[in-house]
Length: 606
Image (cartoon, rainbow, N blue to C red):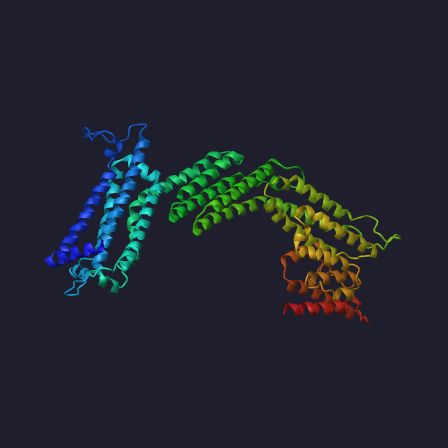
């Protein structure tokens, strides 16, 4: 009751003993709380709740009798809850006292009571009280757990419970500060307290204001640090143990589904228990990230990197089978942990980020595990496509006007190879999206190589054009097993579709095609137009005296249009030179079209 407290303070002020009285009252609270803390942690009381307390004989340690640990723990937590209530009550009294001191003035001298106390160097009484209480908590907890293994184990093992009690206490103290502020603002009815209404809002309450050099919440939780460290260390062991168990030294296989489930359950359980506090959640999330890393390291050791891991000639080898199993196991871990963190209700962003980063490393490891196989398949696809130059496309149209065969030999081989690879190797991976993300990139590369090589075929007769057009249609079927939908391949798919009609168009038509530059790079079209020129106008690779394979490699090494166009320009200039040398009267009809296109291409690069 602010009014009654105010009256009492006035009396002591009049007697001239205000400062001493307040010091005694606050010290009294501190002493009572110290007793409360000691009693709450008294191992003798905790272990013999029912009997009257007898002095133990010399050298007799107080400890719970076997089988009685549960009762001891229950008693301990009941005591801890009671202790938090006692601390909260005492704090409330001191907060209230400080509030009245801050508001109350002497009616004669108009001096504020708090100034009377402060002028003798006595600082904020709530601050003094709180530092005393938090120091007592630290020292009493320390000595109690030093002398009793059982207390130490209880606080370390059930640390989140202890932290929750402290967090609740802190919330209650802040709540009380807000309520007390409200009560003071509304209780100005009596004459004695009428002057309170004019007072400014109080800024003295340490539970509401964080000071630069003193954090009251940190002071409270400092007493918990050693238990937190021990808890986190045990938590990490609980997380690591099941992993070390399922990856025995010299083991050859990744964990079974059940074994992986138990690892995931442990991760979920550790995160759930830590959810009482954002800082603890973050600390445990860091442990979970280390756990995921450990799983990755152990899995990586199982991967086969020998030559048989990347063979694509025969059925799955032992090494390939194991690699598939490892990737599937990493994928399950990745998906399961994602699900666990999605289901955490109030997971701090920093904690989520920590776990997600570790999961990204798992995803990267899956990628590097399948990379040798993907490279191998990619090389084989390229080798098959380049054999199109061994076939003859120079023929004229047959009498029926249709090609003699539905598609070329290399295309049949390519279709058979891709279908077999998907069935023999990639079908065994359970992570379909992951596989398709990788094989779709391979499909795009295959289309790029196909168009590149098709544009280099020389000479190309009318019958050859018909067969090549059929190959373009069949190419969609060839890469279909590598993707979810061929149309998902984006630009590559549009190139494949746009290039096919150009086979039958005049050079002038081609030069004005809207697909140029937009869908199909200028360099590819220019490359294609060489096939319509007389042999004297040599393709860039013929002029350099390279094989088609070497030219293809050069194009891979020089992805920029600028470099490619420069090489083409060199070939055109060499042609001009050769015509002048032989004193030719005119250039091939396609030459001016190519020069125009080259200029257009160069101007778009500016």
